[in-house]
Length: 136
Image (cartoon, rainbow, N blue to C red; front, top):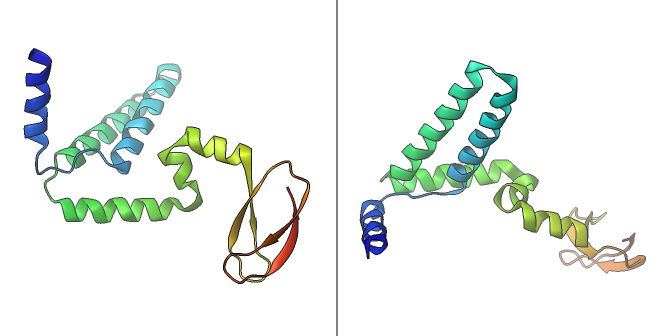
């Protein structure tokens, strides 16, 4: 019963607030890595950087300015570019990289996903319909 009461209070407190997003998850993971590095490096400033990242994450979680936080998160995800899947879900990105190879179409530059280990494949670009061969 006490567990449900605690969950209800947290849900009420978070109502109308931003909550954790991709930037918060990235900041907390980076802070954890910095703390582990700081255990071995023994530098004072690295701990302060980790603490600042956690403080920023808490600020973002508590923010009620949902529009501004959503724009910042979208800009962050856009800035990540091809590294985005590795930041959002590293396990799935590793499985994707292991199972598929990504090649660019020579004529339009569209990235095409082909299965690994199938030998020489004839691929049709979904954007410009150009056919090309690739070794998987």
